[in-house]
Amino acid sequence: MQQDIVLIKLGGSVVTHKERPMTINKPAIDRIIKSLLSVKVPIMLVHGGGSFGHYWSTKYDLHSKPERYSSEGIAVVHESMISLNHILVKSMLKLKMNPYSVPPFSLILGNKPFMKKIFQLASMTKDKIIPITYGDIVYRTYHKYSILSGDELMTMISSVLRPKKVIFAINVDGIYKNIQAKDVVQTIEDRAPIKFSEVNFDITGGMKRKVREAFKISLAGMDVHFVNGFKPERLLKIIENKKTEGTVIKGKRPSTGNA
Image (cartoon, rainbow, N blue to C red; front, side, top):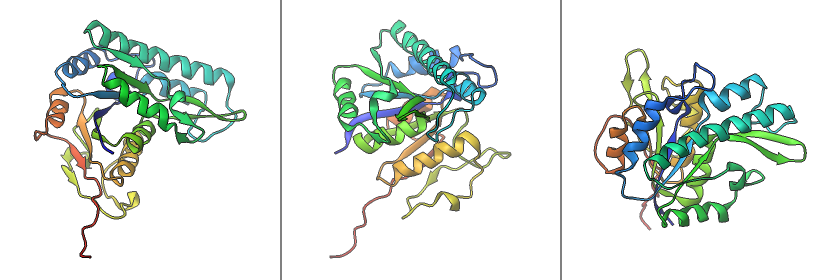
């Protein structure tokens, strides 16, 4: 059952200066948070690590594969993400919004979404609460930990709640067919099955991970939008079903063959 919720991922490259360790992009944070004040429908937020979690996970060689990692590295990465989350929460509180920080570890059971907890987040939005969670290092099994990214959380939450809107706020105008020419792909139509390896778009690194997760979400029937987080007016237009620059990966629709 689809939930009347807008799920938004605030990219780490939007809320931080990724090239400068542990440095927030305060003007960008303030602009995007202020823009959300006008949103009338329930929202849930996920944010990335940017120059906080990504910096330390690289330094301590922590990855998404469950392994026995450095205990010091686990503690440092986790603390850095709590710190970044706290900055975003304080920004929202200053504007009289009602954020509720949610540790990502509470949303999983092993490698699967903890459905009961995720449904509880949806229930909280009915009380004008805005749940906000984030990528982090999480315990997986005996002695093993792994990075659970904000992009993966978007897929997990979407698979359970089936939000009305799924939006990735990134640091560019959308998915480029040609980065040099700034040629944004407006629509990626649904395919069955969508094979990431067949997509001939100019995407690398972190964007590749985002698009991979977005394809997973779209295969469950949900449209996934990519929009420039530095231009929050575009984010609002997507929520209001208005046309704007960006990319939408169309969700796979059920076939309607003749009986």
